[in-house]
Length: 288
Length: 282
Image (cartoon, rainbow over all chains, first blue to last red; front, side, top):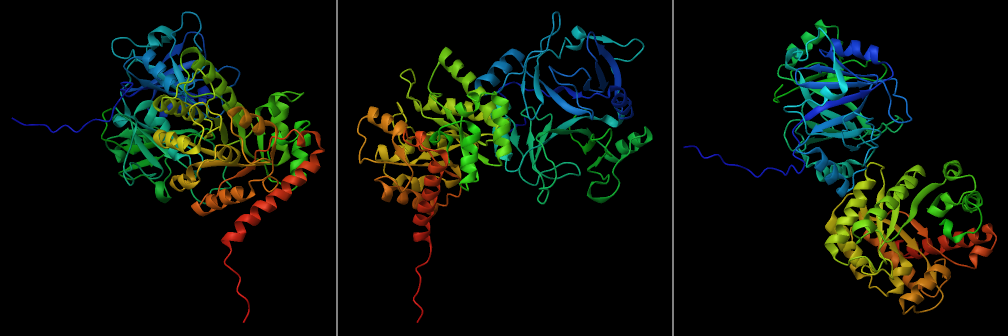
């Protein structure tokens, strides 16, 4: 008989269980859609009433919102506007977050639309809570699936969500650590434990161990650079980076191929697309 | 300087403060909401002044409430935080509660201050918690420091106000236990009489009869406080929290000049101690 030593798990107060979807906002949905297809995503459904499209690749759901929110028009360059977390109970997660000091986001659901509770995250971004992801899909309510398209396009080279990169202002790391630890139960990885080709900032692991968050302050000497707080990039995990890079190059994606961030076994960074968008590949032990 | 010392419209206050050579200003919510052209015009005036905003005041009676009162205060706090952020202020001043409805249970006070700090994180604001000398449960800085320490939030720290410290005759020795990086603001003022015994007397003096450091009867204590802060390594901002009915009916440049004179007095107190003794040439 084997005795498994179980170390105490960091608490997971909301029952977080990975990322349900990542939402981008952009006023160039067609151009972005074409890029996403090169990245291996396929459009699978459209929102019933808004200019919103669901893209999918393997286990990843990616929403492109060209509708804008409230009074504001979507930005031109595609920007990460929201991260939807899978949780045990969305209503409870929402209430728990408000009790601890989160800001409620204004509701956007219209009549007969699914209400997804959410809170304000960094910058203009939102964090949604989704609890129906096992036997029922939230997309079935508000989206119409494309005819003749697979609802489950397979991933290119095993791509899956690895994490999100967040830019923060100087000396703000402790503030944001408090935010993610208190609200969601993230834990800080020891200094020096990094993934990918951009080893900097502070790395946080989700309490479900299914994704990461990287906090990045402006580098020294960057005083002249315009630096705002916000979600700047997603990281896609792949078990074999050279294979994933080759597959994506084949599809027309261009990677930065010089300096410290050139493709290696650890990761790779795409060139800047659509005036400000990049994707990062990270060698990953996570499941696709 | 602090806008509460001066009479008149916001733009005149900003001009007078700038004119006296100050580079920072401590703002009060009434400066913003009381602007005849509205909040946006007030924010624009502050941004155009070139003055750095030291902090924004004041959130009152936040902690220790429950039920509807708590929910109401959270709404007030959110509105204050939004104004604070719009002004480019990195510090919100929150005074210890005077409410008869507030509990004194430190766990509950801590929890509420943690919530306030979390609300402040996305806006990039630090919360400076101050022990008001007539606070119901927290009225001396060591109590406030204990709660701040227990909460252990990066953006929650202390505001120290010399008036409140002297009014309650609080011993300065516990200051040595305070982490200087967790002091987010120091407010200096003095007053003209030796003692303020009752809470009513403290309130009355605090709101109407403060004077600039160097003008009152506790000069030695003010100097001692500033020297202690300097020695413990505090390098943050100072502001003059001077509520004075007389100053509010004097021309603004006259009051700003007195403030300027007080700056010199304060810096003299510190430099007198920290400079090495001058040797006579042999």
